[in-house]
Every structure is written in C-alpha cells, then in structure tokens.
Length: 237
Image (cartoon, rainbow, N blue to C red; front, top):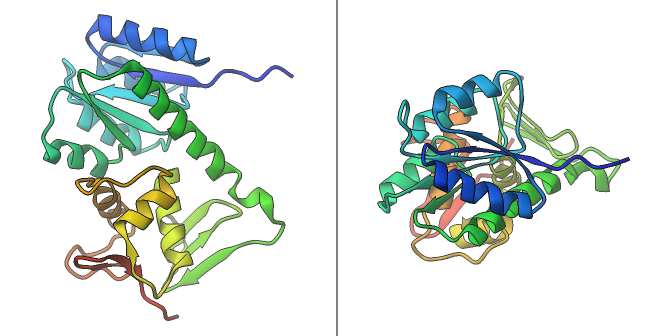
C-alpha cells in the first residue's frame, strides 16, 4: 500500500516566500497547501486537516497569533510561526497561544525543513507511545488522569485536548512526581534538542498547559514552579 505524503499548510501573504517554502517542502517529500491570508486558511480547515502548519505572523486580514489561537480551538497538529520580529515577547506570545516552534525571518529553508521533520517525528512518536506495551500506563490524582496508551488526558472526567508536546511535558512531569525537573532536563527530554540558556520555550508551554488545566497562575495545583530550579508535580493522592 502506497503511503500518502504528509501535507503541510503554509500561510504567508508574501508569494515569493510561500513558493520558496513549497519548493523545499516538496523536495523533502511533503505535499503543500498554500494560503495567502487567514480567511482562506480557516475555510480550508473546515474540510481538510493538514499534518502541520507554517504560519506567518504578519498577514493582511488577521495576525498569525490570532490565526494560531483559532486553529487551536479545534486542531492539535504542529504549528510553526514565522515572523520578522525578534522580540522575546513575541516568541512567548506565539508559544503560549499554542504554537510549537518559532522561526525568525530571514530564515534558512533547510532549518525550517528540519524543524518540520522534527515536529512530525514527535507526532509519530506520540502516536506510538502506547504501542510498546499491552498494559495501560496511567497516572491519576487530584481529578487529573493522563493515559499513555490511549494518549488521553482528563480533568474531573472532562477531556483536556493536548498537543503532542503538551502531553509529553505533562507525562514527563508525572513520571517524575515529587522531583524538581529543571527546564533544561524537560526541554532535552521532550524536544530532544540541546537546551539554550535564553530559551523561553519551556516556560511558554508550561503556561499554556496550566491554562488548559484551569490552573490559577499564582497558586497552581498541579504544576508547581520551583524558582531558579524548575518545575514539579507534588506527590500525593
């Protein structure tokens, strides 16, 4: 049976950049759908679901952050943001609203291709997490339940939709309950990349995860911040 190529949605109003991204993605074996504004992209998503998306922040009808937020209301596929801005605050904004990665223009197309491959590989690993064992692996405490075999998370019986990265972060913290996990350890285990001191990616994803778990920012119940050290989930029942 022939395997269908993974499809990437590219949303960028600069046709030259969208065409350049398409060339590299197609050479990498992917199928590409291009949209030049947010409205067209959202219309496409009503009937089709790509395997990943690359969104420009500066779009003519809606900024990419808002588009990312709207996509996250119903889709969990990986999203990489592209922007001409370099401010840390913009990166944190994108990651906090649900983006998985962030690349600043001008960018190296080969680096973008590598990041797409990494995101899709992470999704594949996430999908296979429960295939290695026939027994269900689950953590359940304080109304929270996360199951590695079924790849589900519930809070007080209500489904909590998590992206593969969010699921992996929560699972790793649950595996290490009672221990403080540094941002470096969390990043290198979840992202499988070398951690940089100025990296705010973990912080932004923790904030997003807390929001989904309805955590009060000043006194979170599940994921505690140990200032200057990292994060932990307390032991207990």
